Length: 112
Length: 115
Image (spheres, rainbow over the protein chains, first blue to last red):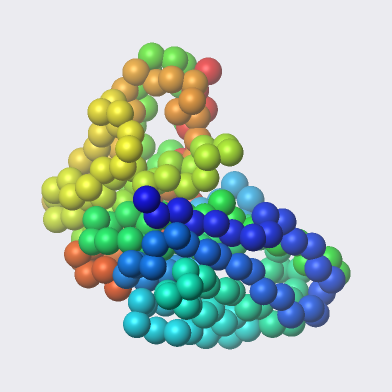
């Protein structure tokens, strides 16, 4: 059974720091991995999607990497800003059944 | 381009009642997914509709059901509401769900409170 874990559960950093969020999954047989952002009480905003054949994806200050064999992904945020404060979720697509399996998220707080 | 929309934003019901939640996908998207985000349980997959058909469902009882209309909008029905059904219900859409490389785009959610 596929399980997704995110560490740490919460992270507080000063503005301007570079930071890394971690995501691990137990079964390497995935189609893709997606990183999302969720603001309190809101829906999810898709940040990056990495296909199983890819090693990384970049969008602006965000860079996500994927190592399928070790069951790990990282989300790197450069030069963090207070507006980056949110919960970050990773999710894997394990099969063609449509579903995403989510981790519990990392709650990020960037202090001015 | 308009994103995924959901209605209502909030819904308050009592135990035993039925709740109906609605979702309109992004224009051009044919797949709709429903997820439940309950406190302490994280996001869990509920249902997937594509081209009007139910393609997959998560580990939820049959009182969770839904349908997809010809215009690809979708409805989630929850019968015989229980207190633990209180959660944020998120709808997502994608182009042709069978294409596994497609991104799922999420709506703002409907917050259901069961009293």
